[in-house]
Image (tube, rainbow, N blue to C red; front, side, top):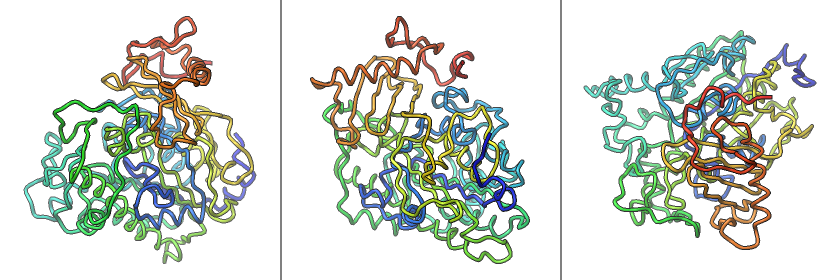
Length: 490
């Protein structure tokens, strides 16, 4: 496959690559988007020096399948996981770190593991310093008997506040700031940059747990946002009142008063903390002594595996087709020789699967034919476009929220597989998805047009979503699909 006009040059002088992956970071919570009062000057600065995608999506907006798509450049249907299913080993060998390693890169993962099983499986990383290393280090640092116990994952100091991994409750981090998972992850990234092999280009993945719950930011950041008047969650006219009682880990809950304010303040605080901590890495790039690196040699990319509903439409967490959960940040800064015009803003729809081929393209590494994503380099350098006109999102949940969705970045169509419910949103006029056009008169033709596109997308799937040229609700749809429904045919 042609890797671009600079392939020969890149073979001689390949760029270093830093991939920063937040967890559960919604795209509109970057300061540059101007939608939420979050301070992110460093990420905004990367966007100003490079490019930002305003319609980037997680094709399966929950951690495990999303991270498979990131690693292998494949859609959920191709890599074989359509929803959350823990404890399933994935034997993929053709991954982004493996291909870069094969091309002579020193590859390293620091921070949260890639949420695959087993967690120590490297997928091409030379080394990984990950969550369980942090939990042991934290217990030793604090001199506590709350050690990491695989049989009791919530028994360690990370959860000692009682704020759990999917809660909308919040509290300040109770230990020294430098022991926060974000600070520790950045410290590990700095350690790698100081000790890496200077004779090789490097691929460093900084995998952050935040702003995924537990919502436990350092006190300084938490108090900053607690003092502010924060925007209320968005409620669409179609939003359904959640039933009582509510639980702190409920994916549906109507919060008000201090609970809602604290949840939003803590979420914003975690993002602000990430941005400040990234300064500890970004300031190392110019003139890194003894490592042969400079800002001009390094591609830096910021993204997330999925977003967070944050109370919008009475919904929390992820696993949904709405913008809060499915739209993700994607910011790229590259050396000047690659020709990305500073301040570029791109509104074409792109997906997590595109990150692998994009970075391979910039590194001068051949893109495997099995990859579903497309290199974004032509868009970034204004030398071409993408083959696709729209993107397909899907998720198999364990309840009636399983869905398929299509979007071209301007309109979005949603079909819930178990109930047959349809939704249609005009993202240009209504970016918060407050008005469901499927419920209004005058949009039948547009609704039918999008329905026909989804029928075309799902035709031939083993689940039987399409029969007699029509969508069929109630078909069996699980995170692990039948073997013959994973890889596309043709």
